[in-house]
Amino acid sequence: MFVMVEASHPSKESRAAFNSSVRPGGAIVVGGDHQGLGIARSLGRRGIPVCVIDDEQSIARFSRYTTHAVRVESLRHEQQTVDSLLRIGHKLGLQGWVLYPTRDETVAAISQSRSLLANFFRVPTPDWNTIQQIWDKRNTYRVANDLGIPTPQTWYPPSLEDLETIRAVLPLVLKPAIKEHFFYATKAKAWRANSRSELSEKFLKASALLPPGEVMIQDLIPGNGSQQFAYCAFFKSGRAIGSMVVRRTRQHPPEFGRASTFVETIDLPLLEELSERFLRAINYHGLVEVEYKLDPRDGHYKLLDVNGRTWGYHMLGATAGVDFPYLLFLDQAGESVQSCRGRAGLSWIRLITDLPTSVREILRGCQDWRTYVRSLRGFDVESVFNREDPLPGLAELGLLPYLALKRGL
Image (tube, rainbow, N blue to C red; front, side):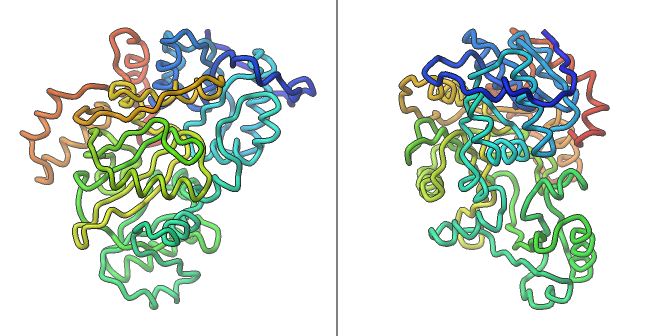
């Protein structure tokens, strides 16, 4: 059912506390792209009602597993997001439902208003004391360095003149300490600087977009997707209840990927140990993805980013034996959850971005076409296309121009 909810202020009733001993009635997925669609499918297949809330044209609203779909004006600002959640929750009777954010800015909004939202919803997102350690990369790298977890060498020059103090071999990377302050303005995750003049030029551009002190200069770790890895988990009480480790073999764009396009499960115990050390230190609870890149110069896996939510390829977990959204729902329902680890040797693909990106890389001579064709023959999970739930895939094809314009796919 597709529902449009008119704007209004949250009522007093929407702030009333609920009985937390009652099993949650359903799940609210905040963001309806392929990531949100994966959550809806995971829970909907088990008969759990799902409400999808989005500020974009959502493909998840076409899923047979979506009970309600609501379009709102914006989910980029904390107060708007919180007001929208409470308003919709009250109007549709979603008291006690579990919140599943799919973007970093909604994680931050929910975390900062966690006590308010928890009076009406079940909120597995940790409080701000924890989330701020991964929301701002300056905090992330500080914690990692204190724990002896390798990270890329990083500088935080306050001004253009301070670039002269960075004595490092080019190329270097410019990236934001807080991704959302940069991403929506540029549709890029980071910029490469191949020369000192280019570094200065891009530093000035980034400084015009970001608050003072948020521009980071970072050592560029060489290598392609074969050196990109991630640890994924449902983490609780200092340990992983469910986990898997992956190689993020291909991404879009190829160098500084906004999203993975081809992912394979592997066995790599070292990343489990490093990631769990970090998550324990920040008292993390919930779903999380910790990203690394293997530096061929010193053989260290270096922590790049931590996402306190589901991630684009999380649906690979169910095929590997770890259904992350369902594990979280069971936990929020107060049910016991058995420990599980994803088995190696399975793969996920997002064809709509993987195919054009890989064709360009093959034409540039940066990717072997035979290896690529072999990966197309053997993948286990496609991000959107599914025989039992075909409409979201058809809808995404129709929305291609919109998606390319809105967020570069």
